[in-house]
Image 1 (tube, rainbow, N blue to C red):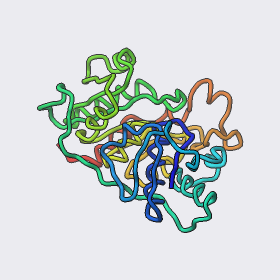
Image 2: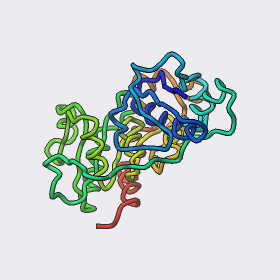
Image 3: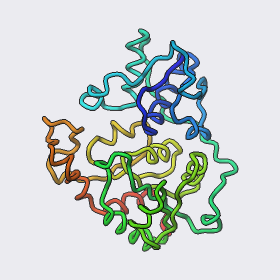
Image 4: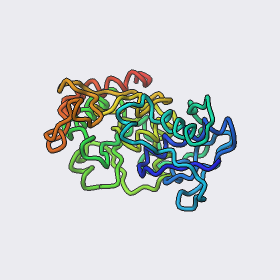
Length: 278
């Protein structure tokens, strides 16, 4: 069976591979992924990963009904499986709970070699509305340092990283997908957002916390151990960007009040509960 996603995001690609792995229990699947370079260290029985732009004409799109998914679904991964069942007539399929992760021969950046255990911060989303405050990230660094952890900021934009963190932590930018994957696998833990890197860390089984408010953790990160931290300061979270659930034009213009109100101490504490005491 040939499967793909019309959705462009890295997180969508990761959710799709959970669906593909579950469906592969019924029949072998070729998953035509938009971001296959991020999947090199995982494998699942019956699943072949291929490049999206080479997909055949009979490939089924799992990303149908996005608006309904935001409003009605409990798990994005299960939603993708449901779309395949609706198109094929198959029944009783469900997303996979995980993968084999190849942890051999990690290649870590030189600045991380011979360092104490480190925590990766993935502080930015492509969707600006999902971004937490820079002050929040700065305070998380303080909490993690006090707990004895080295901290690494990871993104593609060096200038933005330096604006947020200055010289307080190690910074990495411009890495390839396989280099980022190895860096995440070598980490003690990860703190991110509702964003692609958080999905990757969850897929790899790294202890991970997501700072988020718009969507429920089950919708976004089901079938993983990712923990969510957020607030409901506005009284409407998670709103799913739905006007009848409290989302307004002001939220889009000025950012999510609940997200901005999330406590840095709560975020750091959530991750530290998952990590060995130092």
